Length: 168
View 1 (cartoon, rainbow, N blue to C red):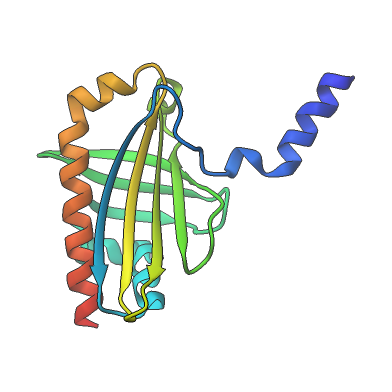
View 2 (cartoon, rainbow, N blue to C red):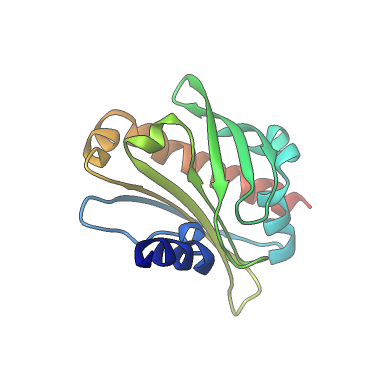
């Protein structure tokens, strides 16, 4: 009975939807860019999944909700390979931080999570930090086989986000 109560307490706390911090086996990729556009516009582009096909060269198709626990299905380009992926939206800060974690078959072997954090700078520009955390005992293999494609995709996404947001 005590174990069941503990499980219910953990589930009720929202912890399964909190973004994970890097651990012993984590690989973290980070891409940053500064955008001369209002933070609301940048966040709106990140959370407008239907619009991804118009501007995002890495996540070329997306559909789903933006509330914690919602499912998001995407088509992503890893190099020249188009791959379908399923994600679960994590807790974030509306207008400032949007995160999701892998929820497809690969989540059984390696944990993947991506957070995009927006910080308005004193000059009015927005610093966009795009961070991908890969965790678990297979994270090194993931880094070896598709790490470059993930880093390149994040850089391409950030550059396209900048162009699109600044164009208005």
